[in-house]
Length: 153
Ligand code: SF4
Ligand code: SF4
Image 1 (spheres, helix red, strand yellow):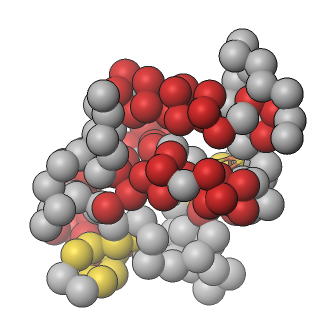
Image 2 (cartoon, protein in one colour):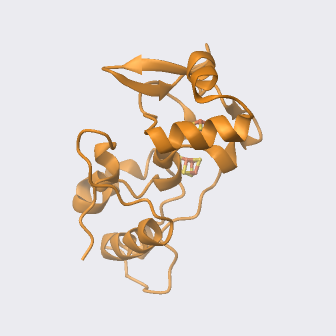
C-alpha cells in the first residue's frame, strides 16, 4: 500500500497518447458537437459528416487507419484541444475510476499520468473537484456518456 500524501498531484498528463487510440469511445453530446464545429469553423452538420461515425444512434469521433483519433497529431497531441469533447476533458476522472479502486489501479498501466502514490481517495477527491470546476458533471442517462455521470457530494 503506497503512502498517501495529500499534497501529491493525483494526475499529470505525460502526453503518451494512449487515450487517443481506439474507436468508439468518444461520444459527442450536442454541446460537444457545437463546440467542436465552432472550433473547426464548420457547421455542426459538416463536422459530423467529416469527423464522426454513428454508434448506436450517438455520434462518436472517427479514428484514422492507424487507430488513433482523427484529430490526433503524432508528437503534438490533440489537434483540436480547445474544442475537444467532454469525454476527453474528463479522462482519467471517469465514473468507473472514481467509484472502483481496482479500476483505478488497472488503468494506471494504460494512463501513466495517474500517480499511484497519491492513492485512490485523493484521486477521487481531486477528480471530483476537477469535474466540478470544469463543469464536466453530467446527469442525463439518455444523452450523456455514462463515464461523466458521477455523484458528487
Ligand atoms: S493516457 Fe493519460 S497520460 Fe497518456 S495522454 Fe492520455 S491522459 Fe495523458
Ligand atoms: S479529440 Fe483530441 S483528446 Fe480527444 S481523442 Fe481526439 S485527439 Fe485525443
